[in-house]
Length: 421
Image (cartoon, rainbow, N blue to C red; front, side, top):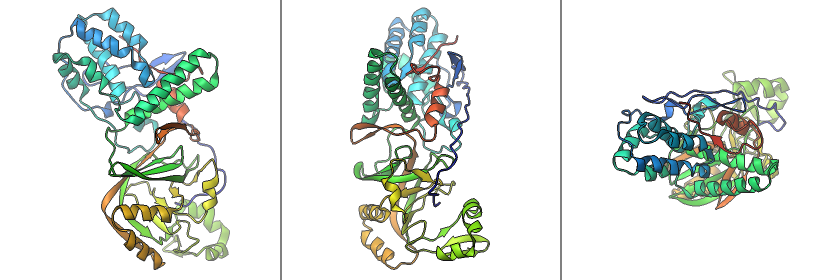
């Protein structure tokens, strides 16, 4: 979809609270902090398993308490749960099971179901049979190592975690500093987003950070390219999805989505359409391929059901802007022809790509394999080992903070985990 080059209405975030019923256990219920509700885990994120049936010992209860004292490394405040463990003792197996699973789910799956926070969310999420795993960990006396294994283990997550701890320490030394509080909160929110995702990203893939408006291309685990993109404007938010492509389309035409045609093209009349190589075909506005095509000279078709794809653009000036959330939702790629050549070369198809492109006619080049693409929204992320921040143009940080119970005051920089029994 080709983007508008003018401001659009800001997205009005709808604030929702969601409940979670655990599998065979009392769930972490809707909670409040300073009068604001806290969202909890979603049942759709778990894998059905048998209820926990294993004895707790003083050692396992102590291991749980120790793990909870390190929850701050994940942007979580588990102080209430730690106190509940101390009050329960090893004889209260039901309560200890619930506390352990509450923390395990926060680490393994996240506290909030992203599918209920986002209208579209098809990124692959993590799934674990946590009830059965907890029972096995108790039987084998390895509760501590099991809990430690549940959060993401990759370098980027660890880097964000370290940055969060540093930011929180700085905020503690300078109480009342809104800038430091915001930095810590932003890092905590993005640790949560990382916990949603399936562990072990595909070694060959394209990641697009919609908030940062950048993409990264990995081949066999090696970063081959990174560049700017233009993503959806507020009101036309790029959805969070996971899809793939296996061919690069050269010299693509553009069949204009009906809503865009009705609002932005048809009212300008036949003269405008002729000047932009547009015509009506079976009632649809179609733009012929060419140097002025809204899709430019290449397109990466994604097999998603949202009509979202990556493409070229004749309007390169937008890549010099600091705010590049400008499109109707699709992803425009800086120097997309150069990027397409890098991708094609990685699959041994560079010569075929150049030949097809040179014809000036619409065609395609098969890569012989699917290339996964993930569209994520991360306002704190790691780029070549460095933590970077992006503006929250969609207001999705505030929406997530509300769901996590972190928005009662600027000083709340961790997501509170509670025991409501």
